[in-house]
Amino acid sequence: MIVGAGPAGSITAKFAAEKGASVLMIEKRQEIGSPVRCGEGIARRWIENVGIPLDRKWVAYEVEGAKIVSPNGTEFHIDERHAGSEVGTVIERDLFDKALARQAAKAGADIILKATVMSILKDNGKVSGVRVEQFGERFDVKAGIVVGADGFESQIGRWAGLDTTLKAKDITICLQYRMTDIEPDPDYCEFILGSGAPGGYVWVFPKSEDTANVGLGMQLPKLKKKGEMRGYLDAFIEKDERFRKGKKLDIVAGAVSTCAPIERTVADGILLVGDAARTIDPITGGGIANACKAGKVAGEVLGRATQEKDFSAENLQEYEKGWRELLEEDLYRNWMAKEKLVTLSDETFDMIIGTLAEVGVDKLSIFNILKVMEDRHPELVEEFADLL
Figure: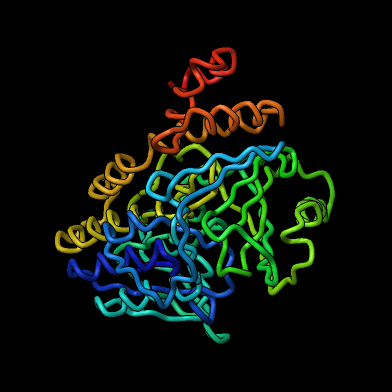
């Protein structure tokens, strides 16, 4: 049984069903993928590796790469092949999520909607199912394993005794407008650094030649009063003549984890995947790619565990080991980098982006950026020495 029908849940369901598992996916919302709470950027290069065929039905726009902008306006461009997991294709997230759920259903997974999991069930200390409320009726669903794919606000892991707690500094609050009648750069997803978004950044993801997602994320402790995020975002828009006269089509708000990898994501009869497992990239706040990559590992392990009729923590260690081999080093390195980046001044960001624009870098990663900076600004790199 999988709680949550986002990308992590659907990919897990698909691969588990393909391996012979009987899968039920429970979604609390009445419509998969809606409401959207996402910047909607993904890279093309990883999606086929997790069995997602590119479908023009959910592709809104494609860009050449990323544009990193310093506080003084210096731009550093990098093509989409090397720009990270959130650059290349801007999607319609609701249609994307539905497409993944459809794949899971075609593989054999069952889906129930508008069903809220109220608690988990346990037999002799082992998770054995969930209690669900749907249309005012409560009922129990028994299962060999419960997969928590219930997102940032996940309760499944907490109920099962897995530590998914977050410190305030490891939470980023996000606000985004979808704007039209504007002039975004048609070739690039933009990331604007500096004090315009303390502890985070402003993004512009084009969805057409005159429409884009314009948003920002800020580290929770940087927020001092209610409505402050809107003030920062509105100030950015008012300052940029490309967006000043634009019209808002929708507003979305939410939060993401930007923490180091958690200690455990499995226990007897329980497995966490995606945002519930805290696999969001601590620097970008992007979670779709990591959720899908870990979901594939989870589904394959669950298929094997189903055949063996063994969902013990010990037998689920293949998942724990598998997702960590794929993601943990980058997650931990990016978390350490984030801890330092949130302390940098606008002048330092200007220095970094100016150097990158002049020298260039083949692939956008913390390690590669620091290697480029090492010759020009060794005094800065000293602060990041433990990341080299």
